[in-house]
Length: 310
Image (cartoon, rainbow, N blue to C red):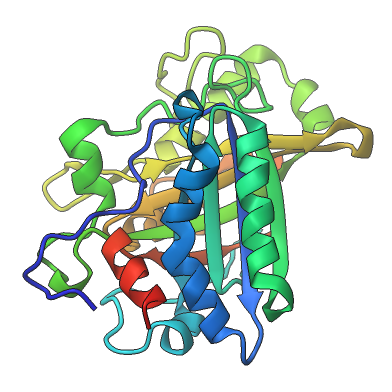
């Protein structure tokens, strides 16, 4: 493991949105730890090799390790706030927890590059891992989800994005890392489209055409606004993308949040599912159902390389 005082290179968590993505969540079979560590150490090189000569494709991959697999795969000290996804059962909605030892978040401007890297990851893991979930996602029109609203509007940028998403001196051994929370949502599009545009806007808390925030107490935007004791808004770095199979009636959003402190996205989820003193549960959940829920720690790029060296 790198020294706590050494500068650590983060994985490409802060990359700008791309046109395509693949999300892989896998579990590692007993005895597959060595093979998995080798893959994690080679991951950045695989992305460079497949993306070589296609720089416009911007191929990257972020890998995360789950709480229940950390000791088996990494050993040694654990990230200070690493914990499993916490299932939530509210008055009307439930956030499920599902298996996941590893997360691979593959991004590129070209879907063929995402496919090639995801296929190589699965090939190298072989029968030492089981794919629990695989989603091929895409950018939809002007950064909209399949409910027709712009997604990720409030994402921080620049220095603020790094401060939001990356662990700093509060956990020096894992500086440059990040906590990733993922959920796969399926939308009830037919029911949603029966609402008027005004009803949809009050549910989301934004105008549909112009993406302007509106005063809508209890809306999705309102419920997901979390502040600290001084009233400053606490943020996450969102990388959600749409996916779907129209022939199967499947229309969804793959939600991923990166944060330096996992309490921030967890607080948002508690407000969404359980409600808060001033609001009820998130009304958008009446039309969006989570079918997965997992949480990971994304170590620095240096950590992964050393992990692969044994």
